[in-house]
Every structure is written in structure tokens, then in C-alpha cells.
Image (cartoon, rainbow, N blue to C red; front, side, top):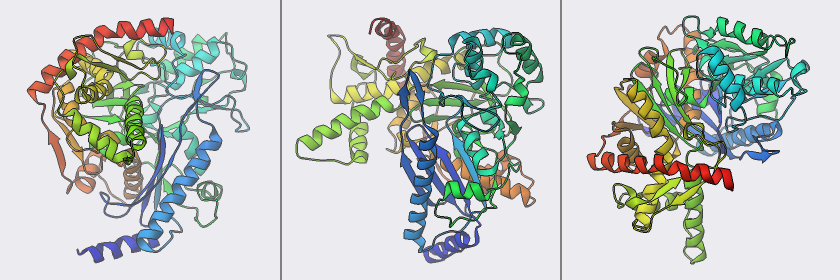
Length: 538
């Protein structure tokens, strides 16, 4: 097909509504991504930058910002379509919503929000998480919705008796677009443990929880508070007229598009990297960083470093989730960019990152004895209740720009590597590890260092920088395909329909990088004592 033919085919797909729209609410950016019948091709994108706020010692986003951001991202998508194709779509074939996983959004029977959104970044649920982990025999991370709910019960918060519904950010947006209180199984598995045999919340653990709070919160019936669980491919409602107006206040968008189950960013990351089958895994790097490894068997014991969640199809996954990813790295890049501007040689952000990343390749394998801690927020795996970003060196370390940048990039992967060591001790094996996110846009740098930190090959696809917005668009297309009679499971659909013609750039671990990162990580683990002292005193 010629480029003109491809352009005309894409244009016709948009006009006829044979497209899938993915919307993902990430930590720093809300993104809209449109795909057509060639699922690997992105037709148009739109985005809007936003940021969480630390209000009354709670990391949060306002719901007004949620909708103004979604509308801005969608408007930018429409503008991109208009610029590329000279048209404006009136509707879509399918829509999917994804967002940051976990956290706590609580509503009363009238649908009014009871308390500000408590995001995954908050680490105030320690007592509740510890009690539930012991009660369930399953690790309950601080950021899970059930940990937030139980902490509210433990603290006798006045909103608890008014609770009618709790959900995640993706579940909330989906609810407002469709009127349905549902959630994809991957995102639901970060609210409450899932029974892999039923693909639903674990009924025995639900009963244990209701018994636990029978006296302190007798009005609670946990199963009644949680969204209905759906696996990938199941229809999850249609865009209502009210939902269409929320998405596009101009009134140009028609209702009626089918929506797939809303998912978390971990699930869409697995889809975006074709890693939903056992013995595959992926790393997603953004404001947070996490690894997802699809398991062949359950783990032998409970580990606080590991969450047990699921793929969007319901298969068991071990998740190493770190609250802190690339934000501190971005702050340093911003300072270097400002230095260039102050010196009369302004450089755009992409060029700043490209220059600094490539400089890191010239650094010593162990980063010259430098250490970088990226902990802007608390980090449970590292035992930190609050964030204290630090750059540390000894008098005999080798302070160069190359070593500094390598230390910063190593620091992004530091806590993740601590968690991955636990998986290795469990004997979990991987055939393939994929990576996605903007951190990997500079080819061969972060990817190479990640391979060294994991001592495993790392593959990046061409769509890696599009990330979860593209992944949820693919999940939306899968729901539409199943409705039309396609009988492939999710893994088969991805391999045969989405990734069949795609190439992955794979980087094998360099032995020098492996040895250098191992040395770095040993110093990093020992240096966490400095981080803890900083939390205690500053």
C-alpha cells in the first residue's frame, strides 16, 4: 500500500468510526491515542500536562482537573486529526480508559465525592496494610484501595458510614462516561485480592474483612462497595450522551461507542509490550516505575516487595512497584536545560535528555562511586515513609557529568532491582523482558542500563513511547473484535493481530554493566541508611 493509499484508508476509518480511542491518565500527563484498523499504527495523539498536589499531607488530584485535562487532551487529539487528515471525527468505534492504579476514590449514594482522591503515592496506610497482610496471608501494599479504606476505618474517619462506592481513577472516569461501575480485572486486583480460579474478588477474603470490621464499621459490606470485575474482551458499557458531553463539551461527539473494561497503567503496559503470557514481563518507567512478571505458578511465600495482581485477562502476575521513577531525573535535566538557556544557548527538552543520556554512556560502569536516590515520595520497598531525594558521593569518587548521569539513571532502577532480586530468589524465570515509557525514547541508553540492572535482555517496540494510551486503545479494539466474533484470547490477539509485523529492538546485558550495576546496587542498599536518617531528621 502506498503512503497515499494508507492515508486515505486511515481517513476513511476515522470518518466511518472504525477506530479505537485510548485515554490514559498518567502521573504527569493525560494522553489520548487513536488507532484504526492497522492496530500498530497510531493515527493521532493529544495530551495535557498535569501534576499531583500535596494538600494536607495527602498526594491528590482534583476531579475538576481530571475532566479539564481529559477535555484538553481530547481537543488536542481532534486538532491533530484535523491537521493530518482535514476532518473532525463525530464518533469512535470503541473507547478505553486507563489510569494510575490503586488509590482511593470514595463516593456516597448520591455520587458525591466524600474525601479528596488519595493516590498511589501516599504512604499513610502502614497500620492498615500490615493488619490486612496478616489477616489475608497475602501482601497488601500501602497504595491498594483496601488499605486506604481500612485505614479510614481504623482512624474512625467520619465519611466511612456514608460510603456507597469506592473505585480507582480509571473506574471513576469510566463510570462517568458510561454510567457503569465496573473495572478491568488487572486494575481490580490492586483494589482487593483476586481469586484466579473465579476471576473475581476472593470471596473468602471478603468475608474475613467483613468479620474484621463487623463491630467498628457494621454498615460496611465490602463486596457492595467495589466495582464489578470484568476480564479483557468483555463489553463494559457504551458512551452515554452525558459521557460524550464530558469528553467533548463542544457537542460534536456522538454517543454509542462501546467501552472496554477500564484498566490500570500496569495492565495497559503489559498490552503495549505484548507481555501477557507466562514467563514474559515488562518494565514501565514514568513518575513511578514498576515491573510486571507473569507467573507460571504461585509464589512460595509472602514478600513485602512483591504485589500479586493480574493481567487484563486475569492471569497471575508478580508486580514490583516503586513509587519513585523518573521525576528526580527530569528535575536535574530541567536544571541543565536552564543552564544552557542562561548561557545563551537554549536547548529543547528532548535535546537535553538526549545529550545527557548519551553522556551517561561514557561513564564508569559503577557510576564512579556516585549514588543517586530518586525518592521524592515514600518508598515502601526501601523502607521509607517519606521522600528525601539525595545525591551522595565519597571524597574519592569520580565526579564527572558522565558518572553523574549514569548514577541518576541507575538510581531510577535502584529500588526496582531490589525487588527483582526477590523474584530471582523465588526461582521465577523470564523468557522475555520488555520496556516502555518515555524514558526509553533515547535509543539504547536507559534500555542498556535496565538490561544491566536485571542481567537479562530487554526489548523495546516502536510504540514504546506511546505507552499505556496505545495499550488501552488496543484493549478497546479487542473488545470490539470479540463482539464481532473474533475468538482469539488476549495473548493470541496481541501476537497475531497487533504485534505480528512489529520489530523489537533488543539489547543483551553487557557483562561490564552487570558487574558495575551490581557494585552500585550494593552501595545503594547500604546507603539507604542515609536516606532513613534524612527522613528521621529533616
